[in-house]
Amino acid sequence: MKQRRIYRSENGDTWWLCRADGRVFIIHEANIPSGGRITEIEIGEFLGNGKMGPEHQALLHVIGKLTELEA
Image (cartoon, rainbow, N blue to C red; front, side, top):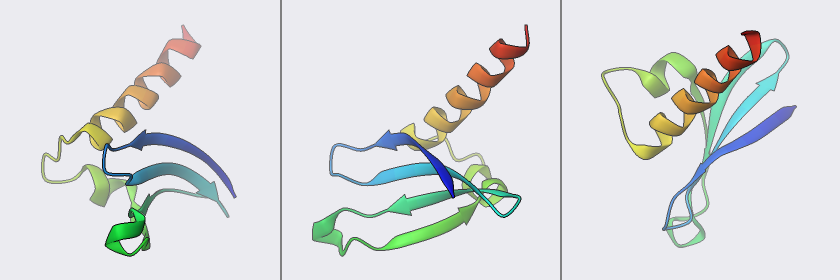
């Protein structure tokens, strides 16, 4: 699996953009005080319903950087 950290919040939650077995998805790693739970989230679900938290904006920034590489 390949992964890239896209955002780490002040409370220690971390979001990773991941690719494995032909899939691209997000992994959310909760902070230790919250239990450290790791959750896989499909890209559509992660960005769905107008979600615009800093972790969502960070993913959109990474996607935007990819388009700059094509120019």
